[in-house]
Length: 79
Image 1 (cartoon, one colour):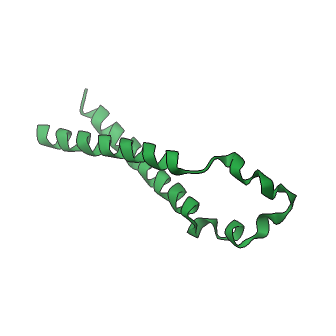
Image 2: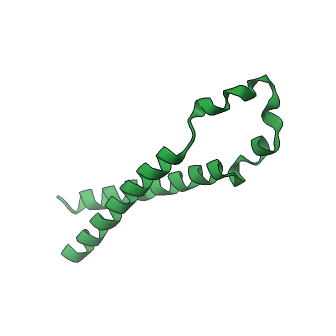
């Protein structure tokens, strides 16, 4: 049981570092304010899910879910 806890802690730390890096790689929400005038129907506006930013958002969501699940599992084991 101690080996499993150690492995989960290492994975938890790696996910924490990876999540921090991915969040810092993303652009701020204010970067797209120039498209308010109606230019949002560009190719990148329609295909955000396939762009680099869209992929980073998807990876962030998956890593947050893993982070929360592993945190809950590690917390259950501490009681």
